[in-house]
Image (cartoon, rainbow, N blue to C red):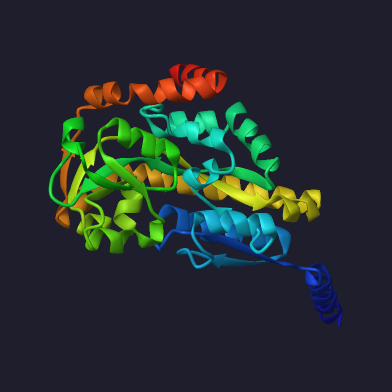
Amino acid sequence: MKSVVYAALAVTTMVAGTANAAEVIFAHGANPGNPRFVAAEKWSELYAQCSGDTVNHAPSGTMGDDVEMLTSATAGVIQVTANSQGAMSQIVPEIGLLGLPFLFNDLPSAWKVLDGEVGQMLDERAQNSGLKILGFWDNGIRNVTHLSKNVSSPEDLKGMKIRTPPDQMTVDIFEALGASPAPLAWSELPTALQSGVFDGQENPLTNIYSAKIHEITPYVTLTGHKYESTPVVAGLAWWATLDQAHQDCALQATAEAGKLQRELSQDGDVTLPAKMEAEGAIFAEADKAAYKEATASVYAKYAETYPELVKALQDATAQ
């Protein structure tokens, strides 16, 4: 009899605890197999377990491109998005400085900066625009792919029609290299490459592989020209409605899923070249010294507008 009573009490408690459960939409643009997709699934699981809310995981750009998802988060249409540095830089221009050419030598160096005072400062700027940065996942150190050749030196990029994300920093880098860059939404990239609108594009290996971009543009040059983060962003209006326990659930889920996402991103840089070569990709190393010299003017441009932050980033990476 006692067991029946205890079971009834357990069910009553569960129902009472979830009676006010809400639906949270977590949206992003990555496809299955991408570290961002894997981490978003993990986030959804962790947050639901912790909060009692239902999480609707909306991947592959089903809620729009990155800019549209940020707008939707601000408006409360979605609650959380694992977004892009480029799109965020349209709202928080300072976040674009994380993509200064050759700023970070490796991924752990970037993570250390993002998890410290720089990340807190960027969150403060984002909140002024109606967004709350829950944490920074990874979007890798980026490389160039081309339809018909490797681009080992800056001269190989002259006149190249290259797709970039909607990020002024990336556009500035490739203009300094003599290419012809143009922004395009990630979801539209494969079709644009297949139709010849672009000669190539730039992305971390994990994105290139998961979207099968190397099957269209098989020449992969390890330029390592810039880093990009994946800011995990909540709408500030939604965030303000959460009690401390729910906010802690979101922050903890972001941190734990972020560890997984970062590990997968870093592992991809090591394991993917062999997989991609087996599938027809042709790799080449870039002349990093020549690339750095050709993009030095980008630092000069941004140092005029953000002298203190550019110096702080350079000092932080030097350490």
